[in-house]
Structure formats: structure tokens, C-alpha cells
Image 1 (tube, rainbow, N blue to C red):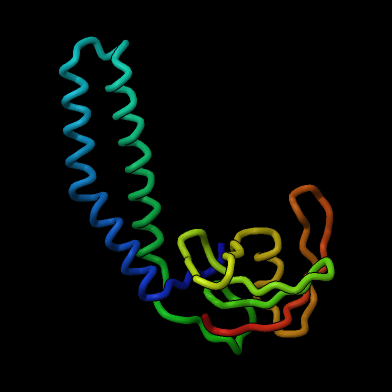
Image 2 (cartoon, one colour):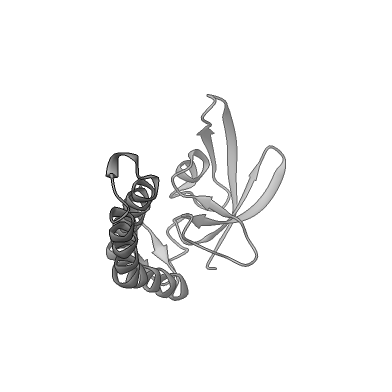
Length: 154
């Protein structure tokens, strides 16, 4: 996986979500499980099983956020070292040119779609400089030529 850069706003938003889940989120799900448990036989208690499943999803999200927040760089990556996650990257492929924010689904940009740095296209352009063409192998086995047309800070 490539290095992850987060804007200060994204970092603050994810930190707030992490704090919410690890405090009141855990308290609430614990209360739901306790309430469901009081309804009798756990083998046939759909409310209990749903609450336990929700708890599992919440704990997975907490682990994901913790790993992301512990390892992410805050700010804007340098543009002179080629394409890296956290930058706006212009790419031309299949005759179309688009500008994407190269990053993860946690990133957000008001004007551009996010292109995952872990996708085949994202992986193929990591490190490329403006004007450089790389080949990406798509999940269906087809290959596509991708030319980097611009690199800029978001």
C-alpha cells in the first residue's frame, strides 16, 4: 500500500469519528447487547445476534481508523517527486483526460473524484512524472495506457 496523506480536515473528521466510536459508541452497543440478552434464550434471539454483529462491525472500523490515524501523514505531499497519494493527478487514458484526487475512500475533495492509490490504475502511476506513460493491468486482465498530464497539490 502507498503512503497515506490526509488533509488536516480529514484527519480531524476521522479523529472525531474514532473518539465517538471508542467512547459513546462502545457504551451504546454494550447497552443494546445487555438489553437484548435480557430477552431470553440467546440461540433464538435475533436482536442479540444483530447487536453482536453491529459490535463486530464497529470494532473493525475502530481498528481501521486507528491504523490509518497512526500511520497517515498530515498535510500535502510534495509534487516534485512524482505522483503520490494525496495529490491531484491529471491522467489521460482511453482518449479521455480526468483529474483525480489520488488517495483512499477516506479522502474527500469537493471538485474531484477519488482514485484509490491501491487500484490498478493508482498503483501504476505512483512515482510517475508529468508526461510519463505507464501501463495498468485491469482486474479483467486487459491493459490500459495511462499518461500523467498534471500533478498538483489539492
